[in-house]
Image: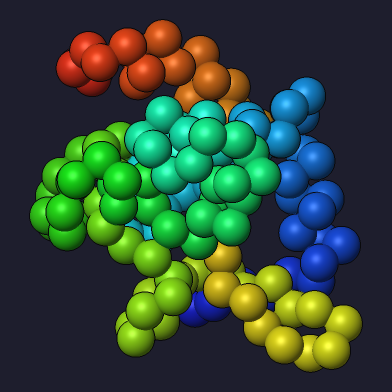
Length: 136
């Protein structure tokens, strides 16, 4: 089992601020199972909700693949397509917990780095166009 990193709420917020985005919709997280970087815009495009407020509860907690029909992650599959993972299930395979002032631990996906967010936002043209993912 991987080591779980813990952050206070303030530290978690700092990690999000370090992404340097101007819109909450662009805050990005990495699914611990399939490695897919995703943000609220992806969740909205996938049908998880119509607004940031509607998808916020899934952001950093459930993989976008739950709404795209991706199914379970297949080991060795390149990240970027999502899977059906959520942190609300029986298995604890997350890498991050945010600890609130009352000492409760809340599992979360790891926040993406600033560089990962920039690449993710720049690739939005193909992700939400219905086109297939460009090869690397």
